[in-house]
Amino acid sequence: MFKYKKKTVEVLDEVVCDVCGCSTKIDEKAGVCEYAELRADWGYYSDGLDGESHRIHFCQKCYEKMLKLLKIAVVNIRISDSFEELTRFLKKEKNKIVSDAQQVLQKGKRKNAKN
Image (cartoon, rainbow, N blue to C red; front, side, top):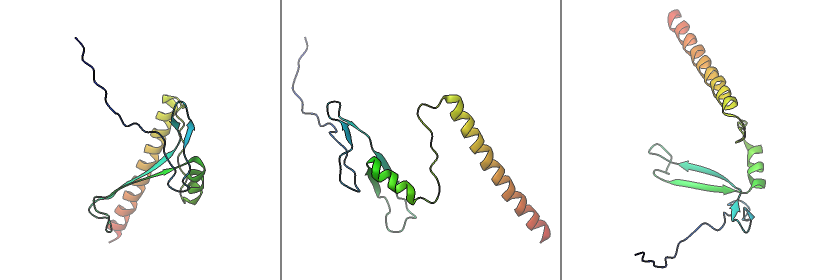
């Protein structure tokens, strides 16, 4: 025998942009929201924010404005990119990082050799 009871469940209805206050809901019936989230989890060495977690939600317009303020470009990887393309990109970035690290080590060795 099945026994049923009614439960009240809280579900996400919409995400509001923390910059301009607009709703990010794009499909009222499906309840679909399109938004970006900036997340910060502060640790022991932060300046007065120890243990705090911050979440900031952006609508697309505010997100695009925020991107223009960045000094370093955001890497754009589309969900539709194939796994092979993503793997090639990550290998290239890994090789670049390894190469940069090797150059730093070589400079350090030369500097130590001179001393």
